[in-house]
Length: 449
Ligand code: NAI
View: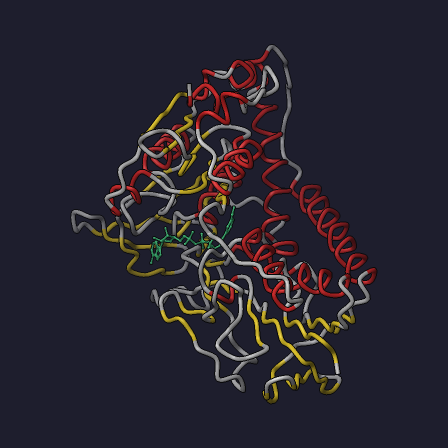
């Protein structure tokens, strides 16, 4: 009997398995595809690899502004795809080594729970059944296919996973859903030369991100040629044509050589039917407490399968919390300082409370903001680049509650803000800490002055 069985080898599952194995537990990990999960194989890593190439291309095309002539910059899509696959392979190899070093038994098969009793859980896969004293469910999430007529079975309509696999640049792309996936792919294909149209149901892109920053990003992409239809209800897809209703009630149609369906993801719960687990309904997912324990003794869950905060970094932290608790080390999952990044060019990065959340909750906040151009390094590296740093504090400035940024490389600066929020720091801590000069991170100190 194993001490722990983990189902799913993504950023929750492999982190948990490696940690538990390293701590001396006997661990079996089931993953039907490659370890690394959606994030490493068909999500975060491949998209960021392609987005980096797209950024290089954009920089090369715009290099004259910086006094550098690049006469014939163009993308070689086959080479981009090859590099993406090489990066993924290398990182998957790294995860395999971690698991091997931790003594984890990896079974590359789909697993299903056969029976449950506290302290004795039976898990089945193609090669047989195993018993484990504990179970950690990390089965992740899958793309939501909305019930829009003409989407299902339409060869032009693709999920992000399918769109990552194409090896030519479509002339045009219609994106249904202007959330994180929608905007990252809009950015990628806009840089690569496609005509991109985004249709979003809500009156803004990037729903939960700061309103002002979302609007600034939208304006920057509109300038680059992306067409936005906000507050629009998609009615149907007919081959390559997508019809939608505008907020004024007018019906319009737009054609795309490809149509990206990016209206969200949902928890993957198959194979768990034998477990009488308590579920949350909105969003649907396995109900867990702060220790990541489910309603069943000896069963934990981490990652997208819990249905909220569907982010790889959340998943990994949840997995660590779950394993700590299995090992008897008290640990609680906190969500106040979970960063969100949209890897567009420029990037959007945010953590903690937004202005719209503060006003919805009636929380009084002190808001400080400054254009990113106040950072010398930002101005040196971003010709006419617009960006914003916005910081929300308690009214007396003693605690930072939220930090939201637009501009490169805000994702690399954000961890300072995450540390501040997680540790209850305020403006004074930033004033007293010396930052490298010139550095874009100085914008945090400037904004807090
Ligand atoms: P999302 O929830 O971020 O965005 C979906 C968007 O589609 C929303 O704005 C929603 O209003 C809109 N929508 C829903 N139904 C629609 C319809 N019928 N017509 C038009 N618009 C519609 O979901 P997304 O972008 O699919 O991403 C899925 C998950 O993956 C998210 O939880 C996200 O956090 C995660 N992810 C994170 C990334 C990152 O951290 N950089 C990158 C990619 C994905």
